[in-house]
Image: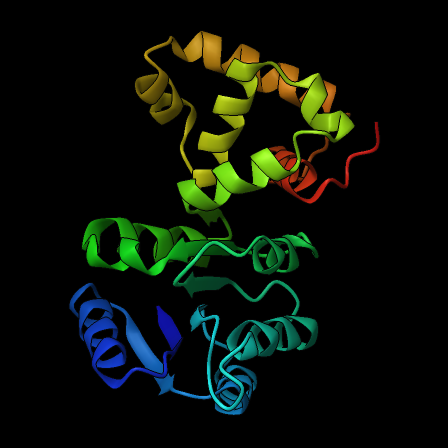
Length: 218
């Protein structure tokens, strides 16, 4: 599995490179600036991009904007964003187009190797890996939206765990409820967010996107 890595801090970039290689990933490119990231993504078209939000030359949101620009050229390009702090705008921008694997992790999670590698693999496979702290902040900020008001507290807990990438069994284990109860809660979430059955659409991802982005119409 090929990775393009973008991180401006040399030691962290080298550390992530070695960690990923130790778990069987191939580093197609490891860069430190926004322009270099965009060029590397367009050249290598990797299986997943692991991107620091803030990169030179501006050290604002250069990394995120380069990744979004690449996704416009390569629809569905899987991107896992790393950030020092929770930034709602960054998370919403990343989720906005609803295509391909996406992830948003706080950098502290990188120090948990198993959690980080699992997130990279999930995003590369087209799934979602959202940091629990990011989800909590987005849910709080969306509390006044109609779709959120439709969900019960337990349904919001289930949806938060879905956003983390948890399977039904994992949700059940975390909440100490049965698999059947989880399935019922998820069915209710789909109904309340008006996500009709479809053959190819991943309604789990659509539910999270609708909720976090406020795109479901009440």
